[in-house]
Length: 489
Image (cartoon, rainbow, N blue to C red):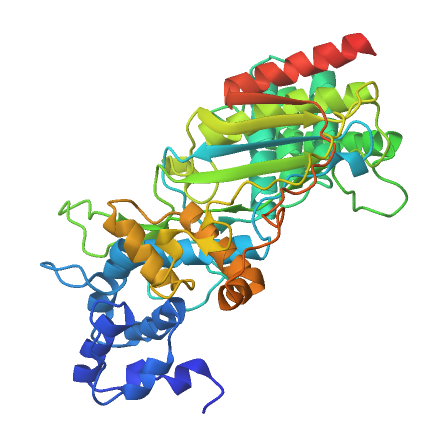
């Protein structure tokens, strides 16, 4: 076997007939293998088959491998429309099994003043981003998690998008006269302690906004003198802000790095779609070179979470003020500015309403809720058992053993139901029970000892939480929390 994947499966070097048959097989449109290329059957992973398909870019079958024909969807378009949902559903479940998905932060091990925000949002517009892959069948693949290949937003992306939204709001407030310079500097310092050192043009953007406020708008006529004044003012405000950073101990000596207080979690999506942008010729008003984008389609749900940890020993009042500011920034990012690529064209926006919103705060004068007393061992049967030692009918084969997951799925779908994530989780629990106890009990014809049914996990102490169903309510709750805890201090 060759060590290089494309060399082992050289689609581009095959004859045209083999390529035509291979396209349908690689996207699971046809089960017929190309007769002259049987070894391609070794590629069993759906995403790796798409990787092989990418070589069609070098052949005359480029457009067929991407979109199919005018009369019939084929190639990558067929896979996205007909096969991607099941692929992503399985991969999403695998990622959950290894604990890759969102986990609630434990505030009991964090300093006083820590808080967390989490909620499930729904896309109002498709989400676009750019993946790290160098070679792909489409021009612009969506960013995917490296191992499981599910679309996701990396924590660093969330951090950059939220910082950008809050910076733009800050600059616009200064230009509109809604705050003075001292307030601008105070809020800029807040952004610094929330996100850390200003990088990727952040310092330049805010310095220019500050300098522009001082020198006024640029004249339409001769602007040479204005340009000189503006450049001098940019240098001056940069030096002034550097001094303020050192006064607040955010910059010490020659050490420029500063860790912010906000920490973000990744967001994973279980849907993927296709967007087509077709630039039109101004003279003919016709488009000839469509650009294909993978996207997360509108209506898809995603879980967002961030954690605030004041490791520098900040006061509680400062932490609560930061909470109010961040809540407003999150709303601006998701409903007004957007996240991901092409946000200026309206992509990456979310609906105002959310679900499962939860704001949790660890404050000085608050105690975690007492841990519930552990009840007596429960004997209630889990959903995958019909009676002690006997699997539910949907999960039970004719001989009483555990049926295959494929057969279980067919039984669920034959009842007119959709095979969901809860069904997959139930099957995995049944499989765990069968391998641990069920097979042995079945062979002995015995029932399990009383109390061997699954026990719920021991609950951990929980800090006071406030729920919300919209971004407006999140901002209201954040203000209410700051007022309640501030009055109590």
